[in-house]
Amino acid sequence: MNDTTLLHGPGAHGDFFRRLQQLTTRIHATRHVDEIMLDLSPDICALFGADRLTIYTVGDDKASLVAKVKTGMASFRQLRLPISAQSVAGYAALARRLLNLNDVYDARELQRYAADLRFQQGVDKRTGYRTTQMLVVPIVHDNEVSGVLQVINNLHGGPFDGTVVEGARYLCDTLGIAFAQRRNDAPRERMGFVGVLRAGLLGRAEVDAAVEQARRDGRDIEDVLLDDCKLKLPVVGRALADHYAVPYLAFHPGRRVPADLLAGIDRASAEVRQWLPVERNEHALYVVCIDPERVRSDDAVARLFPQARPVFCVTTRRDFAAMLDQYFGAAAESVPLAPARADKLVDAVAALVAGSQREGLSDVRIETVPGERPGEIRFTVSGILRLP
Image (tube, rainbow, N blue to C red; front, side, top):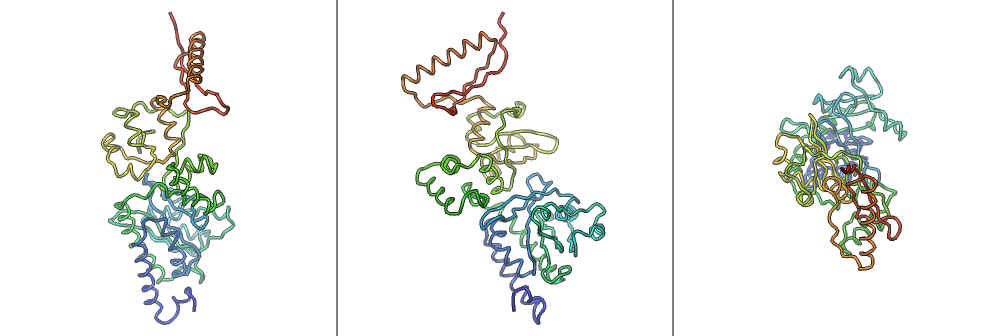
């Protein structure tokens, strides 16, 4: 007898809930949702007689659901859905309603729940997978929706039976408690983002070697991935976003500096706090930071913006360094140059300033990042100098 037939034999109901209790005990032993998806989803699927499972959590913006879909043995791709009737999981969170669908492609069945309910077919079209049955249950704790459980494709055919529905409700009660506890636990280590690098970019052995190299040399893991492993900056940024389940915000030279949000913030404090305000609208204050969980646990954002609802975005250390320069100007260079090179640099800067004045330009800014060729200096010039 295999696991998927236990629901239909004598004593099946009692055996089902004994095994479910064992799973919930393991859930309470995990540190965060990623581990549930990685370690426990096969066992949950086997018990429920399902082909696949997705667990969504409510995003920081309180308007979306975020899930991490496995793309390898220890890698994830982030999936984000609005809390609305434009998706089945979004509707379950919006209406706080359980859905047990026999065929998600049947528009008439969907409309029995809501006239504008839709099934997002994009993933099926991209992968060739055919979603049919779907049991979707909101995860609610202390009268607050914190996520959605989505059980996909009944291996026995037809809608999921009453025992599975009852078990899914019980599992969601456990998940709600677990999510609330995780919010109060110590934040996850930032280095853990290497575990969600997409399969095919780096093998597990290469990731382990990069982590060991960073520890041995006393270097940041980002520098090892970028300089030694030759990963692109957006790849590291997306891995950070998947790790923290928040958006990745890259440096963009054309982004407007929010001068109206910088009262009480200078370069020194931003370097210590490792966060910057990016934009504020009627819905939220968007904050970019190196470690979202560390910033959440601090009250600095709440002190400076007491009426705002912050939405945290993650960025790489190099992106953040460029943003600091963008907000406050380039930091002073503290590394001494050799005398001959220092003389050349002084002469080059003097010629640049003199030439800029002749051309009617001001605000000369010299970047400290080296150019592509030895001895190359990159710089930008902006503004207009008007002399009497």
